[in-house]
Image (cartoon, rainbow, N blue to C red; front, side, top):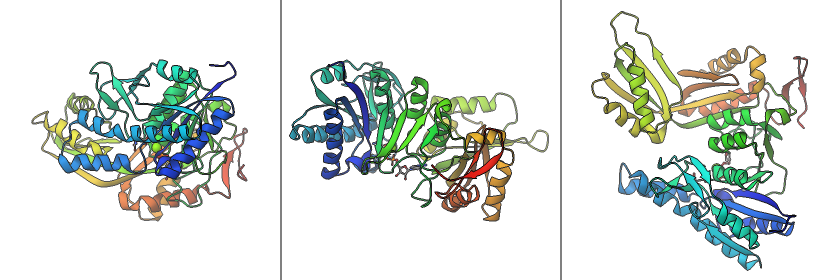
Length: 427
Ligand code: ADP
Ligand code: ASP
Ligand code: MG
């Protein structure tokens, strides 16, 4: 490979490769980057709604699809995109080669449908680049060297493939091309006047992604932070600068509140009539961990009367309700009853300035109260406040909080280094 070549990793999401025109447009971007003197590695997602359709087809066959076979099925979507894009690039007079995650050397653990990347053995990618090819890698998938099976990385996992490759190949930036022009102060589908954020810190993006801002998969942000890889999240349809996700020290602006995020892909599991004695919660959550269920908000109330039974509630992703209830059932007589509620959602407010600015929680609760939105559970980190509410009230909650904290395009409240607060125009 010539010395002058900079390696660029470009990831295109589902909408950006949905049809033949989009695939050709993405291919033209890759070719342009190559012609500008870069070595190009592109990670592609499955086309449009392909992954949703594959998931639905599995549930048409089985209520509890086997996770190994689910991964065999889901991993096909991204292979299709890569093969088609390689054909488009070849027609443009450049050489391209498409690789599955396994061929590209993405090694994972063996937890099907939620695998973690544990190693990247990128020799085949490097060979392709040395042969002056644009290398296309199927996102969202890898191979477990333990089981020798194909795995997938969880929904949105192509972002993580891209960041992992950027880290392994020593790229200076990972470009994530998507259907919005960057990371916004709220999901632009819900809040039309949401503001595009020129820069977000890894720390804030982690809390945003973990609380529902699906524009970047949580794991990709963790990876980027751990390996110090800047992410440039931008539009695949317009040639505009997007959002840079960077270490905290490189972000100039310090807003008190950065964004309002939400999720409706949540369910509550309530374990009723648990004995109030040491070790029970440990057993329940160990069983959930064993079943690979991620638990989010947890609440347990101490029984008022001595000897009475306690209730324990926690939230999980909707797709984890069955494994979660199965795991608790597997513990035998540990409680009186397990109930589930899939009609819940979560709204969160994220901002690094929250640490030094008291009163944010009070304002969040007041705003929701004024809208008669009942808060059912609360959880916090040092820079995030999340409230579990009814799913159908989520859009109104997001819009009200976005307004109340002045996050719109027109104005944003930032914290001066002195600790004073003042209004500034957006950059
Ligand atoms: P891709 O298929 O390109 O990976 P995704 O659908 O995974 O795209 O992510 C992009 C979508 O994320 C946007 O269309 C937008 O609706 C949604 N989204 C949610 N929260 C945000 C946010 N804070 N900023 C930007 N987009 C967001
Ligand atoms: N196709 C997968 C999904 O829809 C992975 C991705 O798009 O990142 O979740
Ligand atoms: Mg995505």
